Length: 138
Image (tube, rainbow, N blue to C red):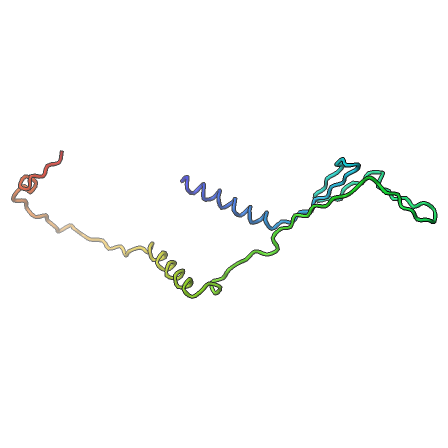
C-alpha cells in the first residue's frame, strides 16, 4: 500500500519536471538610478516618468536617462528526444524482446484442473514412522 503511494507521488513529480523543463520564461526588470522599480514576468514593465526621451529643437540632442531595462531569458527545451525500437542496436533489440517475452509469460495463469478425491482412502498406518526414526517435534 505504501509502495503504491510513493510510486504515484514519484510519477507525478517526474511528470512535473518534464513539463516545467519545456517552459520558456522572460523576466523583465526596470532599474532607475540603480534601484529596482518593477519586475514583470508575463506583462510589460511600467516605465517611470524620467524615461521620456526629449528632443531639444533641431539639434536633436537626446537627453540621457538614469533608467535602464534588463531582460533575463530562461530557455526551455525545444524538443524532447524519443527513441524508438528501431534506434536500438540488434543485440539490444533481442535482449529487450527476450526480457519482455519472459516477463509477460511469468504471470501466465495455469489451467485450473479440479481433482476429485472423494473415492480416495488413505493407506493404513501399520507402524508409527516418527517413533521408528526417532524424530520428535519439541
